[in-house]
Image (cartoon, rainbow, N blue to C red; front, side, top):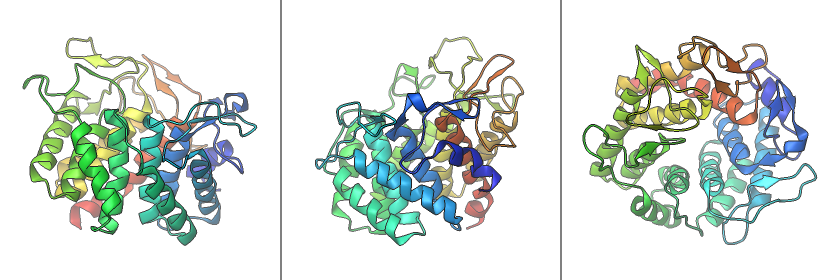
Length: 336
């Protein structure tokens, strides 16, 4: 296994992906979750020339997600090491992230069996709906992938129409245009979904609003040329900065949104944001410390004031791998 994926492979088993690690050692007792496995399928399925090991990992992740799925499209999230699902199936974030992963894998995986299985999972997932904006935003990203592959995909188009109704509209004034009173988690997925839906449904106004909101979010989280992202506790307009316990998922969400905006506009502003996202992991952050392990390929779990949480869990590792993957393609997207 090549260095970038070595730690991800360490966390991966024949049946799934361990959620947490103590430094680099998987914490088996903490089990696995759909949230992380969905992210893992996104990262591995987007590899244009994957190694046989990465293809096998994609297959494992896909099978995990399909096993978590109910006939009505709802998803379990948490699974014990023995393989027992520990929660009731729902349409919370894990459902949206699974549909995102199904959409990416169905359209981008070089493995025809993964593409076919992901398409089946997506069709089943699109039977369900969520009342949670971030869940529907992630689901919309998957449906937009499917519409990009087949503009006549009725199930995917219907989900995009429904997602557009659930996403919150900006309305807290020009100084705070964010549609919520506080920035919380995975914030960039909201404007990213607006951009993706706008592109898929030819809704120029929604696309424009998403780009404006993403630009504000970029400015709000950039200090002296580097990212200063929202901490785990969130951020309100009057909160002191920087805030710590910054999570790599926030940077990865910005990178995903920047890539979507870049493909929508070819504007080099978004390539610059991708570069800053990658740089945050390398050390261009509020503590000036690397947030990735150059030896293992893992990502560290949190940025503190003058230190890092050196545990290398699945979420943080996948945030680094996704950001690195997206940044590598930024130049090609600008000139395409």
